[in-house]
Every structure is written in C-alpha cells, then in structure tokens.
Length: 415
Image (cartoon, rainbow, N blue to C red; front, side, top):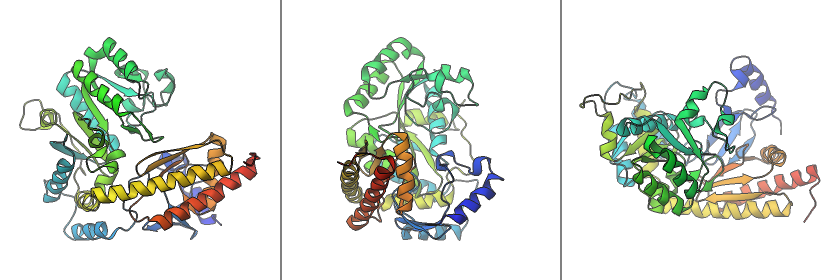
C-alpha cells in the first residue's frame, strides 16, 4: 500500500496549517491518511486505497457516505438557497422531529457543533439558576470549550489537566468528580451544591465508550433536584442508541440535552433542548433574555440533512445496527485473544472502543490501515446503516490480520 500522495499533501498542509491539520483528533504520526471520498461504508484515500469505514467520522455519519435520501435533501435545498437570516420551515421540521423523539425536549435551539451546544446549555443553566459553577466527570468529553476542557483527563487534580491557553481561574468554575460514582457526586454536591448551576454528564463516555450505570444517572437526577441544580445530559454521541437517546433507554429525564452528529446527517450541527421553563431563558420576548447568536445556526443544509437522517433511523434500524455492533465486538474480542494482545473491547449498541496499551494501540491502528480497516487512532469504532453481516465479518477479518501483525512485531506470546 502506497501513501505517497497523503505524505505529499501533509507536507503541503504543514506549511499552511499548524501541524498540517485543522482538527487535532485527526492527527497521528507520521502523518494521517488523506481521504478523497466515500460511498456507503467505504472510504478511499488520495492514493486510491480503499478502507472499510468503521469510524464514520467519529459516529457522525450514521448512514455512511453518499446516503441517497440525504443527498437528495441537500440537492433540493441547495437549489433554493440554504443560508438566510430568518426562520425556515426546515428548522421547524427538524425541531419537531427531535421533540417527538425526546420526551425531555420541549424546546430546542440549533448550533453548529456539539461544542457550541454545550456552551449554550451551560449558559442557560447559569441564567436559570443564577449560579456559576458546573460539575462534570473526569474523562468526560464535552467539546473543546475551555470550561469543559478543564480537567478532561483522569487525574483527580483538575488543575494539572489544564491545557495550554486555559486560564487557571477557569478551573474555579468547574468541579470534577469520578465518573459513575454516585457517592462522590453526592459528597461534592453536599459541599458545593448551593453554587452549582448544573451537573453535566455523558451517559456513555464518548472517548472510551464506557457506560454509566443506570443507577448512577438516576442518582444524578435526584442529587441535582436536591440542590436546585439542573441535570444536563450530553447525548452528542449517544443519540443514535435509541430514538429518544440513551436517556429514554434508561428512563432518566434531564433538564437539558445537548445533541449533534446524527441529528445533522453528517453536516455541521449541534442542538440544545429541554423543558420549556428552562429553554425560555432564550426567548427574545422576555426582558433580560439570554442572547444566542450564530450566522449559520439552523442553516438549511443541516436542517434538511438532519430531517432525512432521523427519518431513516427508526427503532428497527437502531436495533439492527446494534446487533451488528454486538457481532463486531465479539469478533474483535476473539481476534485480540487469538493474538494474545492485552486488550478489551467495550460496546454500547453500535458504539465500540478497543482498549490496548498505547504502544500496541498505535501499532494496531497502523496495521489496520494497511489491512484496509479505518478506525480511530484511539481505538474508537462504530457501525453505520450501510453495513451488514458480510461487511462486519470483513472488518473483523481485517482487524484479526492487523492484530496478528502486532503480535509478531511486539513478540507477544502466542496463545
């Protein structure tokens, strides 16, 4: 497999963009493969190499690439214009679909990313409660906004996790708690609850696909209520797990929900929705309302693609790709065992993550690319609707070959 054009493109981009990229997640050494196109569950790089796409742009492309209903919706919208400084029927249509699917969402506002959705949700919580502090979990990822990026790692010393460019004072607004530990959450709220505007949690850690227990999320709901704080569930990744998201699956009702990815059919989008009483802080008919602006909020292309995406993701289709996820997880687990690699696979529905020590993980990712399997450098994988048993089995076979390469390269003992 040659990657000469990817290498050349990286050299060109390195002179134009810092590090040769405009999205840190896509970087891995010595240079990332540059993709030229995709169809269904396959992508092709600039050198003509084809890969089975088990990443789907970090779960955003739930219907794969070139999905006809989304293409048709985009073409129809583009012919009439797609960016206006005014309300549109497409905004109403997508909002209606989301409110119908999520029982906890009575009102919604659109943004251009999950990061923006979280920013807007936190501001709404602060305006509604009159408090400043938010509580989040170590290891939780809620976008690159500085307040939720603070303490994003596992180190209990949140200040040690501050990234360059994040002022230390920001950490004073964010309290970190261990994930899936109701006792620790209760203790933190007992001490600081009167200052907390919201508890912000992912029902499944997006960075590692580690689910919270139902008991934990129900406890978070009770704890928030006991201290007059709001509960925000970040479902940017997990909305695909049920027509009403993970919250409906587990019977947890948040005050606010942040969304992204699948609600936009692969276009830039985010959303924050919740109970009307809270969302009404954005109502411009009120005095001292929360001003939320954005030139491209609710743009026509994202709205049309989102409607097509959700229409093609009913409960039966979610169940089908969840079964494919189980098939994939079983195959990956067996492949790791056969290669005697010290790893494990976590799965929630159609979302998966391969956990390995970093040296083996890097080697596995590189080997998987050589075998025509596209996955995240950190081990994340997902199922998209164009997949079937045959394609999943082909992905398992490619992964197994990659795992064997890693075993031979690292000298792991054969089982």
